[in-house]
Image 1 (cartoon, rainbow, N blue to C red):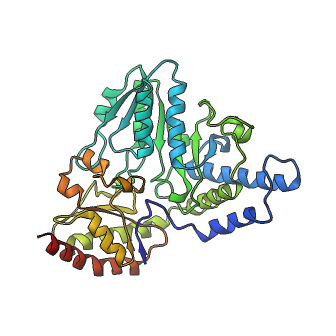
Image 2 (image 1 turned 30 degrees about the vertical axis):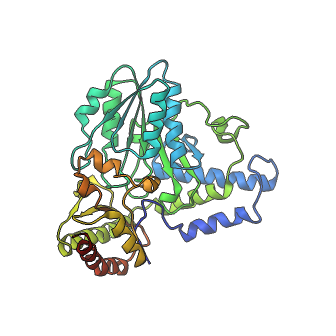
Length: 381
């Protein structure tokens, strides 16, 4: 098998499984209990909080609140920021956000907020002038992603946050789900107020994530009940999953492994373009403008879903876009926003690599892909 769908989810690292296992067996205490078994659980939560804070370059561990994943973190950031906006009802976001942000914005619009969507150019790059023009004294929150999960294109979020601060009083939320573990991050050096994380995107377990809430920013509690997570998210913590995100955060703190991943991605991309006539990359290809593991390639005269299926038959896992939107069978909203022709968008495949991919897997893909594309083209003629 060649698994090249790491932007959908990643293989849990062995270190992560080892960190989680004791809290599913003998160390089963409730972290709110005051006895030794409970204290052991509490200690692993706080160790994990410190590890995530270090990974994100937060000023202090208390700025990290554990959640169930990126969707909850995005939803809480947006809906919570709107709730504390002191009468301001403007929301600014981009046309290429993940569904967790787009659908939360749709919900807030139904609740009476005014949502302004900033576009991108044909390479997926944000129009910063349009962003400036969208900011007003009524803007309550600006939500942008750090890296696009479909094309890999990176937004200059530090600069964006500075622009927002200069032109409004809005809170700045960054969806960092696709970027964590792939790019260096130091939130303490930015104007970013809220930052979303999902563990299973960087070799941690599914079902756990985090929301960075900058010290001094107050959001309404996500849930009501006990005093867990400093009263911000009530409910007994999923200790084993939090142990897992802590282990994953420590693993990916060193992003040096991404150099090897980038070389594999670049070789895959360049060889596909050389071996398959009519193939083209979607999005900015410059190194500084995208995360090191992702390439989105269109194959003319080929249906992307059929190509995905044939690759799957050969044990090669890829995607046609966001896993959260795969059931809709619609053209990617990201590629639509980039104004790609329908035929090209429908013929696109996302290859997203991870730390455990090998050169042999890339060889296998390159050995099979040209023939499969040729086969599908012969059928469509």
